[in-house]
Image (tube, rainbow, N blue to C red; front, side):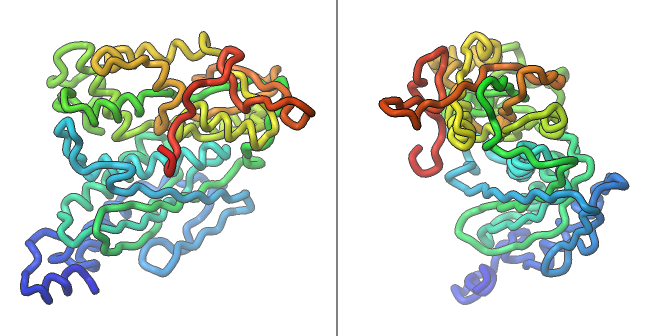
Length: 377
């Protein structure tokens, strides 16, 4: 039963401008042109979209390249709030951006170039169609801003639900072989592309009633022209909140690291320590993190640390959703631009008798906290 049918059965007319009043076909008529207007930007050697939006599935000619497929979901109450304790009201464009970014980052972590997104949206019939249009614009804005020039939105589905959720299937193609999590070797250099801790600090700010969300920039703003931001600390806090709402994964670093010889790679979505542990266990190595190499990442987090009484290094080590890329390179491999060394790999002796090596160490010790677990907190 559709929301409109349910409302009719209850003797109520759906409010004008809502999903229930507009209907699925009407919603599609409004949001599909937003995706259709996106420049294709496909390279000659890239895939060709044989069948895009409008059929039961998208069809691609991948031109002989290895395909990478990933999917992820944004769920109201778990991954986002429509209204935050600080007073910020989430815009549709922010949800679309974040949903796109987290899926594009998964492709980059395999060393792949993003090619296509297929989006499934579920929402109550009371949802404003303007909000859904804004979500569509957020997907397109993220694709453009993050440099996924060959990527387009090629279809999806709409459905009714009690709360808003967005699920994306993301397709990419590798220039060579995909970079998996299980290829790291003892002696490899552990490197990071992108940032750590910014989105986690931003989340804590959004959840804090004393944070003023009025300075949070929109996707159209720049860091140099925001009349609402009155001082450096306020700008810094607002930018951290913006990273939670609109993360900026370093998509180009994925193929660059693959080209530099990366033997293992992972998207840091649940925290450095937790995701480094996943890579270490998959590869059968121990990842040894170096806190002096990570200390430079805390500077941007200091204003939030002062406001919330937190040690910024906690966010650096355990905060997720910046969607930086953690990779392992041979010692002699050159570091691509924007990539920093933060540790090394050594043999894990857990298989030896009387040894139980932790998968991750920090300056030789076991980190106190791990990071985010979707079911364990």
